[in-house]
Length: 145
Image 1 (cartoon, rainbow, N blue to C red):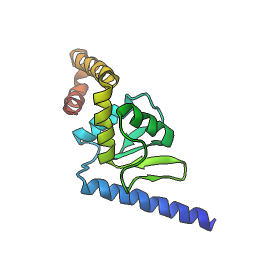
Image 2 (cartoon, one colour):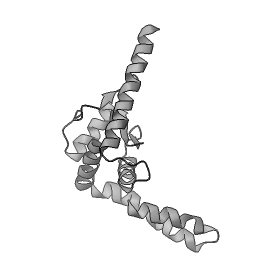
Image 3 (tube, rainbow, N blue to C red):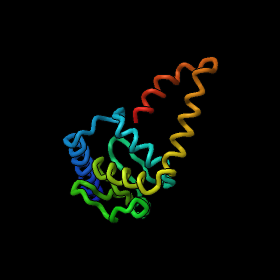
């Protein structure tokens, strides 16, 4: 029991350190267009266990390494604040996630653009339908990212 508590507390400390690191490096929250763009890149990359949320890229080591390989980024974590949690998921800060996302977009632009363009076309047509005005603020917000 004592070892589980110690492991839990260590992981919580690592998570807090990662959050502070992101704040010091300009992370402004999920409403930041850059964070939204990063989220869209990883949502469209075809790795369902990988996610970008609250400025942190998370997923199994093998899934993140596949994305890094596709992007032409060396496998393994670059950041000293990245860590592997008790469940085996790797947690990576926003600056490293941004680098991977940029390089993935350069290496596989259609992977990301196909999903983004389809969503934008769908959302652009909704305001002309009855009751579709609700989508206008979302469309404006996501276009920025």
